[in-house]
Image (cartoon, rainbow, N blue to C red; front, side, top):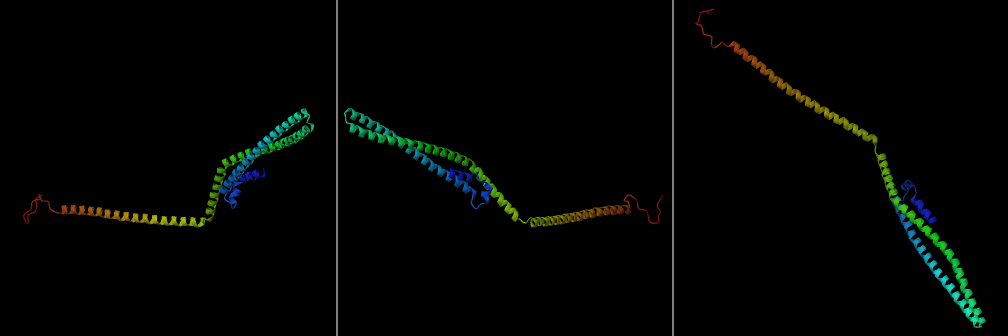
Amino acid sequence: MGLFDRLWRVIRANINSLVGAAEDPEKILEQAVMDMQEDLIQLRQAVAGAIAAQKRTERQCSQAESTAAEWYQRAQLALQKGEENLAREALTRKKSYQETATAMKASLGQQNAVVTQLKENMRSLESKISEAKSKKDMYIARARSAKASERLQEMMGNLSTGSALSAFEKMEEKVMQLEARSEAIAELGTNDLEKKFLSLEAAGDVDAELAAMKTQMLPSKNTPKLPSGEPPTS
């Protein structure tokens, strides 16, 4: 289980420390899952091999027991026929196969324990791989966010805040100067125009007054002309 624990520690490692490392966190996570899947494939193969060996031992044990039973029957037959030596030899064969069957039964017990342990390891690794896959995207997203934040902090650190603010202040001052000039020009233009109209209006008043004076000074057309030397009648 040491290999599984090591891989799982990689998956559950602190993502911030991975960002600071030379390796790419995304590659580490992807590789960790790939390694776990490769280990799972090998473990499944080992389980399949152990089960196959277990089945083979079971068949050999059953065959040895069956053969031992056959030699026991032969020993009985030989003894019935009066062939004591032949019966003894048959019992010797029967004992040999019985011992083989007994040894295989003990081996089967060990194989059963191995298969059980391998199956538990396989189920544990499958569960960890499933959990790792479900968390991998989250860890990768956190790694990308940490990278982006780090790059942003570096960019902000490289900016000269003082010079930037100074540039804005200069531009603001220049804009204000341009606006003041524009207002002054507009005001001057408006005053000149008003002066021209006022001059025209004043000229009109003078002309009207001059015309009135001329009218008053001219004699009326209805007044009769008197002979020379005669005073006007009252």
